[in-house]
Length: 294
Image 1 (tube, rainbow, N blue to C red):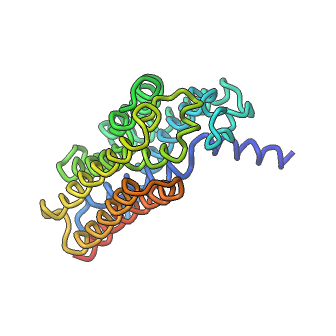
Image 2: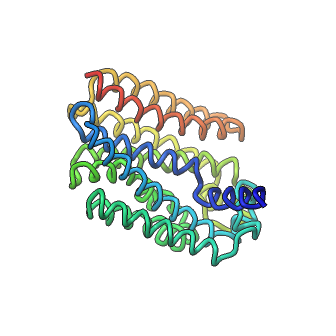
Image 3: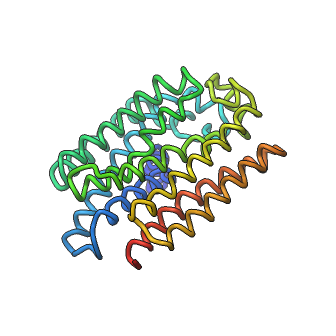
């Protein structure tokens, strides 16, 4: 019996897309600590933990709803066929109830213990990802990642709002960085998973416009991303430490994009996708270290 319950818990946890949620909460956490001058007090840490919990719950709810809506598509793709909804291990009702409970609990925590603005922004992110992106943009346009990237770029803005109660220019810069990072990140994945997307019928850019066009777009976006990554230093939000890290990471991402354009291979696209994850995580970690050292 205990094995059965452990398996069920694992299935529900898989619906929340834990690896994605970890990055979301991490970026939100960076937004929070950057909004606090100096080291957070004990009360501030409690506030931060409650905000992270609320954001994690609502983000998990959006992921679970996404799994429910896309269960048929997920079943057609090797990358997602293992998901409990795609395999029929969890019913539609179970997935929907799980999503509703997580969203309600997370929203309640944010409204009562953080502030109403953060709750409404987080709920808007849920609607943007689970409804606007998943149901409307993703199946209709190859620009789904570009437009829908606004939802994925919200975490640092949510974190900033959780501390300050408003949306400041530093938070908007962090939003812009993730917004510009999202297309080359996902298009690198779509390049080496193009057959999966073709079978699913989703109009991803490599399917609708081809491999070459997608690689050009990846390079253009990495160049734009580099400009955005320099903005925290330009406005005085960070110091030389962050600038050096941002330049190195941006040069690395552009280097991968150039290599992809010159001599494509699935393995290189896979490496580019993996580096994009390192790029964003290391960039925000550098912001955090820079914030406390300088």
